[in-house]
Picture 1 (spheres, rainbow, N blue to C red):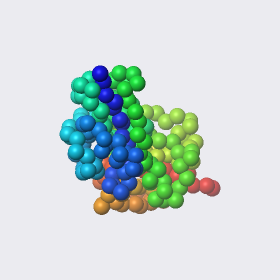
Picture 2: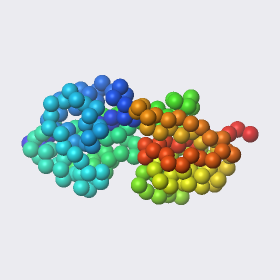
Picture 3: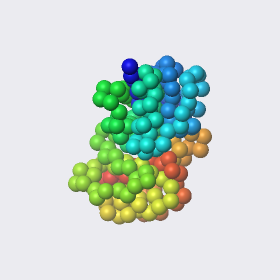
Picture 4: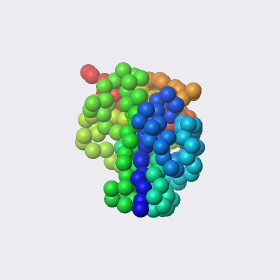
Length: 209
């Protein structure tokens, strides 16, 4: 007998941004997997807590062991479980049909709202612990490009992107919904701040001529 794995999107980080459905699923789980800061968003859950490696190939065996014992599992992921999260790689390594996704608010959605921007045509790239691949034509022509990243070297990467894409205004949202939240915008001529938090969403907005 096997259980179910719920891949739970926990939103951008603030406790009040966790959706009610996510709370209900975690409250009923037999075991909760995820990093400590995400587990802290669910103090009401009585289930045992287990940390989880960030790489799906090392995380999957731990979740599968509980699954095969017939336990219902909640795996906590940042933002939305369908956007550059552990969910995709984990689901691919678990038995077919064993996973259910519980969506959460994406940090990109929250960042766009903070700056009053529509995100219906946004292109999303991730620079979390990886180098960006060559931009596609769709990336280059998108009116709004979102880059997830932060930390050392992120400002340089954004400057290179801005130079290659032409005139763009950059909006920086760091530590969204957390106590140290920072929102700032840079016009094309302004330098990009350094030392950006590892939880930063950069929005590169086309400026109409």
